[in-house]
Figure 1 (cartoon, rainbow, N blue to C red):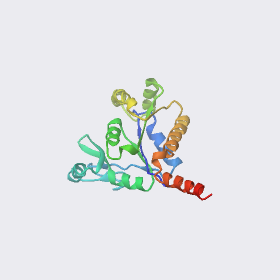
Figure 2: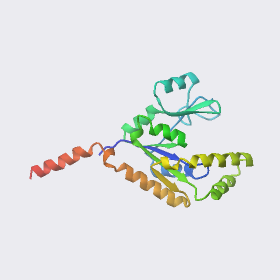
Figure 3: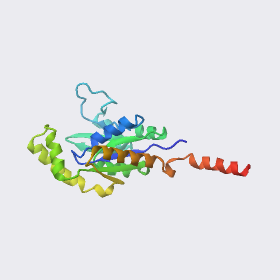
Length: 211
C-alpha cells in the first residue's frame, strides 16, 4: 500500500551527533532523500548545482520566498539559505521521506508550512554539557573562541527541546541510532499516513459480504 512521504527534521546543538546520526539513517535506508538547500552564495570549487546546493541569485531566491516556494529560509553572514518546497513535495507524492538537518528556527518554519502535517521532528541532546564541549574540542578544528561561541549557541538551541515530537539523549551512538530507526518505522506505519488503507479494509469487508 502506498503512503505519503514524511518530512523528518533532525536538530541538535553542534557536537551532539546530529550529522553522524543523519548519515547512519541514510545508510540504513537508501530511499531516504536528504534535503538539498538553496543558497545565494557563490559555488565553491568542486560544488555542483543541485548536489551540494541549488545556487540561485538573490533576486531568484527572493522570488521563490515571495511565491511560497521555500519551506524555510534564513540569512546567514549576508547570504540566504533555504529549503525549496518543490523537490520535497515531489518526494512526498512518491512515498519517499526527506531528511532535514536544520536548526530549531528552520524546523519551526517547516512545521508551520503547508506541509507541516507530515513533519516528524526529533531533537538530539548530549548526555552532559561537559561531554558536549569535549566532543567539540576533540574535533581539533576550531579555536577556543569559536568553541566558546558554539557552546553559547548550544544553550539557546537546547532551550527549544520541548517543541519537538521526540527527544533523544545521545549518550551511546548505537542506541541513539536504533531509537531513531524505531521512531521512523513507527511513524511510517501510522494509519493517517497510509491513504490506501481504507480501501484495503473495504475490500476485506466485501470478502465478508461474499461469504
